[in-house]
Image (cartoon, rainbow, N blue to C red; front, side, top):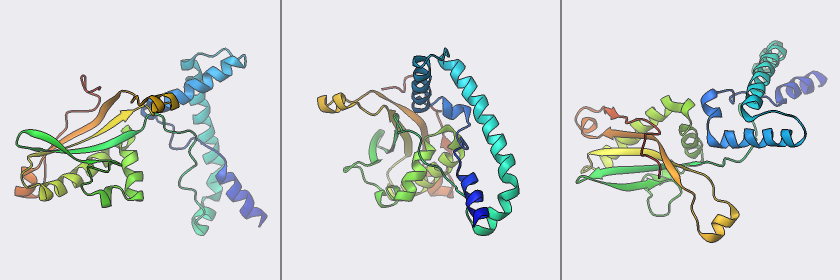
Length: 227
């Protein structure tokens, strides 16, 4: 029993696994959290700028993960045998800049929305896209680290759009990323400005003709995409 408690306890120790990604650190939510902690440390008397604090934190995180792997390496067979791996960790902070999926189709030269996440009006394939497990995946696709999965998901959506909208020429997938409003903004009915990210546009005719599409990806965070 003691061995089991020690093994599981060591595996449960906090570690920034999955978070040591430079691209992910550039996200506004992550930057807000890091800068908040840097400000708290400065208020406590530690003279560190935001960039200096992040450099120290990155070095500490890298060393922590290396030490954790070294300690847990002898226990890996035990975890595999008992199935006691912890595949995900608790959230460390609220997501202050969430991204909301939008799907549009182009018909007659004009774009029209068919699905908007959590919208009561645009509900195409909502039974699938709003499923709890699918929502967890869609949340991840807004992050740069999941670019390959985002492309695969876009292709999956395109094949269904080609069948469900026979008059549509193209389908467009993108995320509306914006800061969550403050209580005062909610009370005043003010919506923070957002910007489009992860935009993908896919021709549907090749899907109907040959069963495979040719994505035309204009890129993410393009100039002029803010709104």
